[in-house]
Image (cartoon, each protein chain N blue to C red):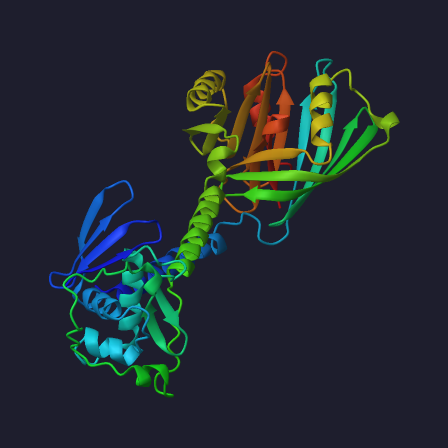
Length: 160
Length: 267
């Protein structure tokens, strides 16, 4: 094999490797290509047996997610909306960075003394720039989404 | 007849065209022997026969390949190869390219009286200096194209970066915090328990199964259970694909009844 042929083969090999890598990037799985909306309801029983009800909405696409929550306890309400950029995504994991957090007014914060752990964890989550890691759990259909949010130690299943 | 010349690093070179042997003696006294390829040997012989005289591409091809028809790139290749041997690949100071005219061996590197057994050049090809110094349109352009090795190196680096980036992209899942799942099946109900390790997920699954002895067998759906300190967190996907999540202390709320409530379809 003369040098020119060898060089040509090297170029061909490099081209193939690059094409393979670019192809792998282009066809890598994107969990949420289009806007997907999910919602769910949750109930939490506090130590005094009072019931904290939560309604959650999640809108997610390949680049951004918005998670809105309305909580009610004994007729009082509070809400939070978190917007985050998706920084990494895979088949079974999602990493996001919080870009905006909108919360209820302070006077609406209730039951802090009953859920102190939750309160403190939320301080990290609502901080702009925080990184959140989601583990996506395999569900039987695309209509449902289950995940575990590591920073909040929170398990959730949501549906369309 | 042997030729002797110096290299840029001060090494002394001795070339014997009869056996194509090139011996290089470094300033430290180390001697390296190498046998040149036929074309490289013929080219070096021609260039050293008249150091300082420009040899046109035609002359060189005629001498090196005995007038055989060769591809135009062959000469470039031989020059490239010879320059590498003479450690002259970067600045071409020894085997110089004379644009549009040809090549010449820099006489500054040829030691005085170096041609051993010096005789008139046997001249396998009788050269006519005048013809060389007045190039015709046929001889131009003779600028040697750049060797592709530089671009190849850049391409290798780019490829390496692309591969590393792709690898990083695909290893994200392994770097991200993970959660392990253990599953068990009860009739039409799938129970998935979570844990930081597979062992802890299985242990929770076993503990959950023990608490669900009295669970009605007609429950349909999927349930995910995680234990956080003293609380259970359960998430359900019901038969109608609706979902519900609950967080409670199993000391206050029995798991079985909460699971049944979680999977209960609202009418």
